[in-house]
Image (cartoon, rainbow, N blue to C red; front, side, top):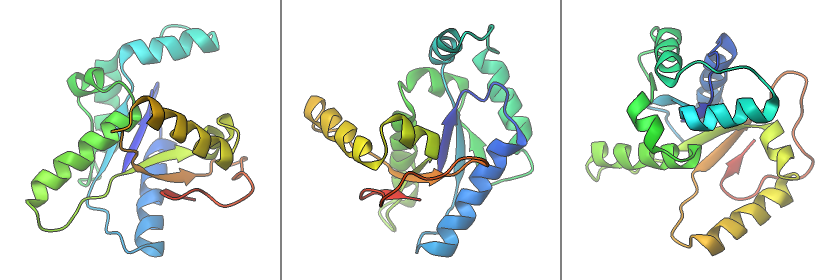
Length: 173
């Protein structure tokens, strides 16, 4: 499972989100979660977000990675994407697909790895709900037909809620 974000700063809520996602998947699906990953956004992506939101200067990626490593050090199954890898991944979808491919290689043809990207209900709302997600994915596939979307797990933050209706295929809520 992969949780992407700026992690500026990382906090207990991020770690709890990944732990809750693991517990949900193992309790309500047939999946066994073998690893989790915090995937900090690149410096460029984080700077664009801060500028758009009118915030000050963000922490450097290397600092955010170190903070994530400290926050997850007590959980051996939860790792942090390196600063070098974070700069290469253009999006959280890229980092999730990279994790899935690495897991497939590690399994050496035994079981099949399935990567889940954790997202929030606010992210779903930003696309206009479940129908907006379906439309966005269809548009992305017309641009890049070979694109593979990870399975997604939508976590609800305190004070927010899921959009009405059922999630599309590949999405769990």
